[in-house]
Structures are given as C-alpha cells and as structure tokens.
Amino acid sequence: MSDIKKEPSDENKKDIAIEVNANAHGDTAKIQTNETAEAILIILKRIMKWIGVSALGVGLLGAIVAGGVAGYEYITVTMPKKQIAITVDVSQKICTDDKWPVFVGVVNNSSKTLTNVTVYLNAFVPGHSTNHAGASSKASSDKILKPKEGYGSCWSPGLAYTAPKKRAVNGYDW
Image (cartoon, rainbow, N blue to C red):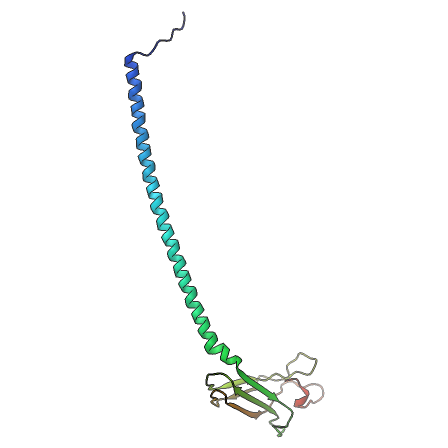
C-alpha cells in the first residue's frame, strides 16, 4: 500500500479555478466595501474639519467682540477715572471751622463731564492699620464738572473710632 499522489484531473482543475474566481469576486466585493468606507471617512473628515473651522471662527468672533467691549469700557470708564485728581487737606489752611475741618477737592482732568463724585475718606493713626473714619466718612457732590474744571468743599470727618486720647484731624494719615 503505497501512497501515490494523483495529479488533479482536468475536472478538478476546473473546480479550483471556479473557487479562485469565486474568491476573486469576493475580494472585489471587499475592495468595493473598503472604497465605500473610505469615502464615508473622507466625507466625515471634511464635515468635522468644517465644524472645527466654524467653531474656531465663532470663537474668534466672540474674542473680537469681547475685546471691543473691554476696550470700550476702558476708554469710556476706566481711563477717565484715572484722570480725576482728588485732594484731601486737613491742615486747616483752607477749612478753618472745627466742625468742617477736612477739605476735599476734585479736578476733572478727563475729557468726560462728571455728574457726581463720591470720595470715601480713610483716617489712619500713623503706623497703625485701623481705619478711624466711619461709614459716614464720605464726601459726595452732585456738582457737574466739565473737563478741566475743579470743585472743593469742607467736610466733617465723621470719625467713628477715637484713639485713647483725643486726636486732631491733622494727626491722622488721610
């Protein structure tokens, strides 16, 4: 009993060829499926790219608008406030009445017209951190000040906390 390998008959070769052709058609079908998947991926990538570009554009537009609002706020509010000069004088050269010994002066160096001004006064004993001026220690005025105009008046200090010994208003750092 010897093993003898037989060559495939022509009929068997046909079967093999048909099987190969079947695989060839299957491979073609797989290639078409891969091409469809690649096309879908390309479309999805393009959609995602445009969504990203659109989001970036909206973000950039939002940043430009926010920058414009901040710039407008700075130019119209912050910058003019920095150009207002406030003077507080307790030397009693200007205000000689003991009931109204604190002079508060305001000079409008901005290009805007001021319609009211409120100055909160702070009074500190030299070398100490406690504010001796009370909540009522504010000077408010509705005097309208056009650019380059100034106004001043005498105010009561409204000291809420007094040191162990009575201190004159010029004994505080204002």
